[in-house]
Image (cartoon, rainbow, N blue to C red; front, side, top):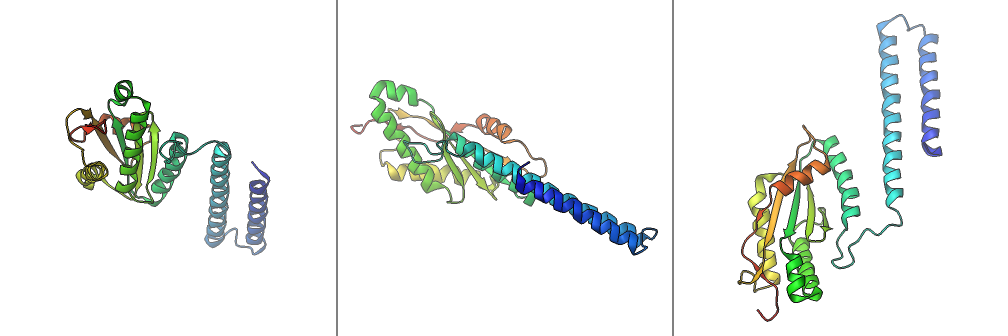
Length: 229
């Protein structure tokens, strides 16, 4: 525990002692009112200590990632490390506020074959195009990242799967707008999977990722991989 939170613990202990001592001096300890005051005072101190512990844990998480790269150099999106840290924080908030959220995984099914057939430069172009479609398809408050070699991940706070079809169609249309050749033969496949975070029965981020991967379905027709297509 750092010095800041040790101070909180000391202040809490002193406050609890003074509060209980005041109840005793007032002669209320034998009355229900006095016992209720001791209980309320104790619960308040416990809440303060729990908040201090949460703050320390959150600060440790930030310190662990401080100085480490948090952005994907190619796309400019968050990288996997940043996505995990930010989404864990969003899930904590969602559980406390009772709000749902949606996790989206988008995968380029045959990116490796594109690179083998057309070169790394074309593979990079495709990834940049996908990143632009991600940015234009989701809100600024959503957590978007290049999660893996051929995957993007987005967490949408305060969202549900009611708009699943709209999410899929919006991404597809934005991709089509960015590249008007979308849908021609000889391209690559895109799959998207979605799952919902339920604050009543909260699942871990790791479990949500598994569920989103299990939900992966083709997004639509193939996207051309060659500018000469």
